[in-house]
Length: 112
Image (cartoon, rainbow, N blue to C red; front, side):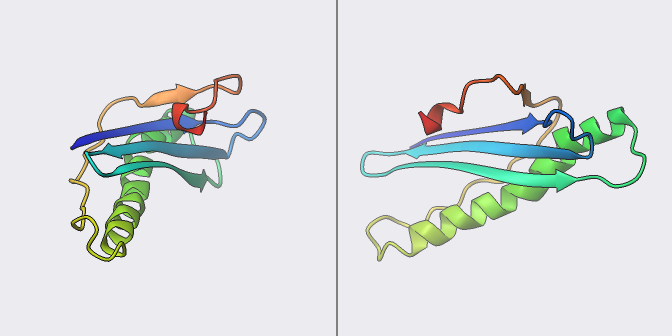
């Protein structure tokens, strides 16, 4: 089984209080090919230093969004009537910088 999980962050221009965490997930096996793009929308309020917002976007936000993606995959695989075994994504730990998408970035590969 091949699993690819790529978190990315996007800061919409002219919207300093909003950012998005985008997960590109692909799970492939001999009889199963699942591709999912999951978007978490976040908004900060008040005066938040830019470095604090970026730290949150790179560490905490992916950790907040990932359990929803994980539950989706488990629920989907479990509702296929036993065609495939129930699949549970392994826990993920997010450290360091994740890729930042720019407004002129191409669409995620899975969308093409």
